[in-house]
Image (cartoon, rainbow, N blue to C red; front, side):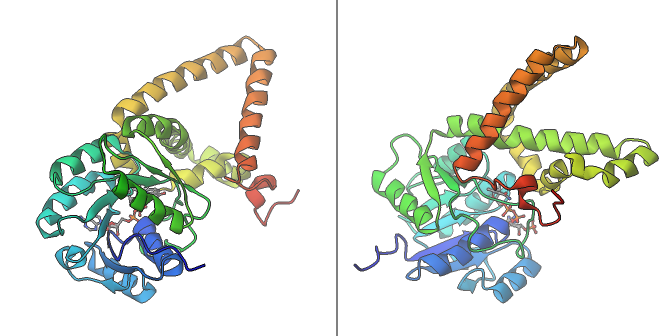
Length: 308
Ligand code: NAP
């Protein structure tokens, strides 16, 4: 049986960091019929992207990168997407599908819809990443067995949605469509609040007295170091996520602080049953994440330095 035709002939990737670079590498591995062009605002990133062949052609201008594109994917921080898209709009061919990979969707979907009234716009969010950023961080298998959530606007052209769907499936992702508002609520609790908690707890530790802080680092395997991995994530990206997904984050934060107060009360009052009941429920959630293949079941995430 011959392979399915590539959903897009030329894909322009704007922003060649972790996500943009991984898309370029994954396209080369998985959709051989597709030509990629890339651009990044930073000349040093463009140079490194050429060395790593993150796109077939790394262009010196964004205009050049999008000129013949069938699909344009904005892979820059959420706060930069609208401005970059507005600058490039006059150079993007009519009919090219416009998409992005931003971690929050509602504000971006609205902005892209306004900027491109005549092009099909289908925003997306690959729920895959690491705490690394930049042109050295990307790898071709980043999206394998990870979800990519597509958030088409109401009345979006079904053919364009289906093409983007097959594009992400070809990169190895499991694809789901969702309303942008619902996406932002779900991601607030599964990604944005966990990052906020990690940033806060690591910040609290760094504000401790010198002696205690050095002990926190020394004994970090007790749990703290797993927060430090998340808290090492890119500051620009995460600043933009919180500024753009403010409403959903505040809803979930209110809920979380309420639940935290319930835990505080249980500890103060010695209510072991309440603590045990919650910890039993949360353990079941961890097991279902592992059962769905979304994490490693080995102790300590399979770290090689695990001593048992
Ligand atoms: P990244 O590694 O920092 O890459 C972003 C790249 O875009 C950087 O090289 C940056 O250059 C460049 N850039 C910034 N402004 C630009 C502009 N105006 N024109 C062209 N290039 C520009 O970040 P990333 O992790 O790939 O994130 C990119 C997008 O993916 C964000 O919207 C993020 O929300 C989303 N996302 C990230 C993850 C994750 O885990 N990291 C997961 C899913 C989705 P400078 O560094 O010089 O500014």
